[in-house]
Length: 235
Image 1 (cartoon, rainbow, N blue to C red):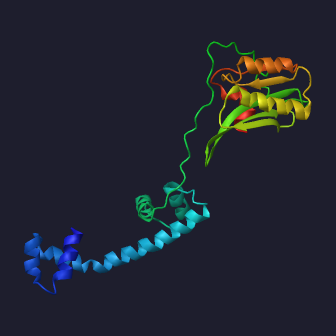
Image 2 (cartoon, helix red, strand yellow; image 1 turned 90 degrees about the horizontal axis):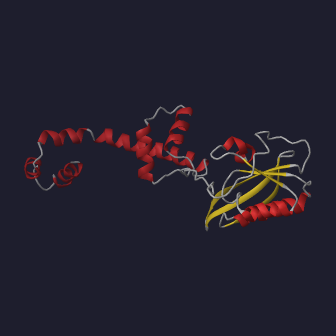
Image 3 (cartoon, rainbow, N blue to C red; image 1 turned 60 degrees about the horizontal axis):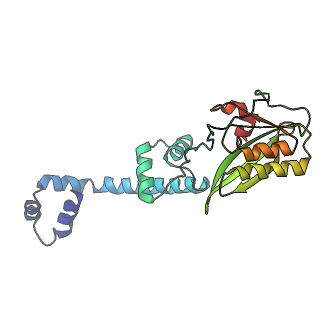
């Protein structure tokens, strides 16, 4: 509709307004009402431009991570009473987008045929002596070349990462490489407990044999319980 009003406004110097309104089937009174609202529209555009500038500054200050909810909340904290839908519209028109946190994918895939080791930790996530209790897990990090998988082992006595490995996969070799680093760097004590979840990487024969060869003891938490391995989960 606004396009028709603008067309009449542009052509009224050449043709009568009555004729133009009849041609586009618009009431002449509607056109004059639109003309009277020109100042208000111009004021709204100026206000939107000013708000867009504020939003841009806040977005850059957030390292271009803030989306509509956090931008709106930030504006409210600064005393700007502005409608959230208006913020969304201006950000959309300006091409401003936040970073959406990806839904967390679980890497734990239990091997139904494997026999997990008993739980030797029992949610007691503390140790008096370094090199006696390690907990491990795998996480993933987005990079420009795809997903990077990180396996690590934490010492419960020091809360230090004593062994880690990174690769573009999360096969068993990833966790065994991390365990080799932990054993080589810190000299784990004989019988040191190596605790993890029941993912297939940790219940595999390859890891079980490596733990046995190093003179260590394997421990596994229950399936679907993040609290059994909370120290590494929180890391």
